[in-house]
Image (spheres, rainbow, N blue to C red):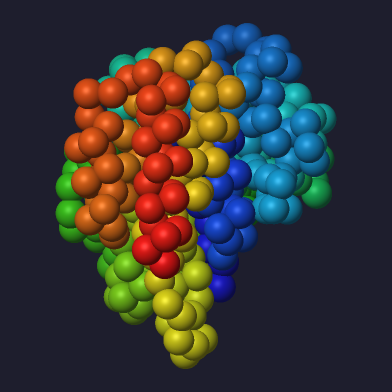
Length: 322
């Protein structure tokens, strides 16, 4: 069983990857997408979105980080994939799943699921451009507006040379609304011979078991579920192995929030750090009521020293309570 951390623009950056892979249970992760148009991107772009390339293409915990590219021009995607490979990327992932309107408007992400031939051309070009030892993988949704071309797209990706498919079990039009149609992943698995990884609406270990039953996939990619429950990968592994494991407590979670806030503050413009912390707290509310309470305390506070002090105070209070 493999458990991967999903790429999520504006959320799963190098700091979040560092934290979640340190908590553990994750086998590999993927950068936020690197947008490719009609140019060979400079090194700084790759290093900005995939800083792990400067440390062996892995997090400090030793978890490999694949480089994800997004675009519609086979030639330019191939050239940039070759550059990513030269920089040490362990795999090149191609994004055909992003549902963002601005991205789709410029022929990126899920909009290309209307063009199976383009998918084939892109994967074929990228596969030819990078060394054979470096896998080319793809992430797709079930389609753009419907599932009419789902199987055609999956076959096109495999025939182009994709070594693995991650399937988010919703269309672009579905967005992130429940449910995820895991049964469609099973249909894709029947049509292709490469490994298929299930993605979408896995919030709990019980969800994993249901997804596995419906999709036939042992391997999964976790996105919002892992953001909301940072030890979800371990909970899944424990359930599968029949081992009892206590979920991470809020007292155990708080120090990670502190590390996250300080790392984000060191990396970005200071005023952005409180917003990033609040963004994560909004997800964590699903697993920890205390996250909602902390979010309320911080709701109107955007000064870094004050937010840092409140976090420290929370850590101390939880430490005393424990």
